[in-house]
Image (cartoon, rainbow, N blue to C red):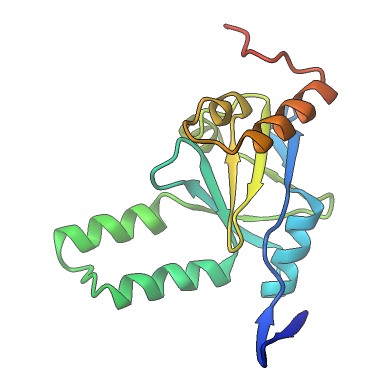
Length: 172
């Protein structure tokens, strides 16, 4: 695992960075960006990841087992007793709504119909890194979000244009 010294402290450099716009094929196979796969393997030594609905955003979130451990630790620190209704609801959303995946040798997963529906994902996925995790968006839903950094909008529009996607979602 790559590390660097910053002001005398060791800092892990294995975080999710970047973005990608990938298509979903007719068998619901989705290629996870190579850079994201590399981070998962570097952080965990496996090709395992979890994908579930994001909290507070109309998208999916992907993360590796190290982030799942952070989620559990956060629940523990918040003293979220999973024997209470509130604690159980929080824990079951975080862990019960996420699905485990193993990335195949071609770098793909098969995205379930249920997750596609939860993320309102059709034919393309806009991947956006968030450090310890990444989001998976319907690119048109991403563009509808208030408060987006204008440069991120330009990046996505450029990616969409390169793939021949119309600037506005076609109605079915």
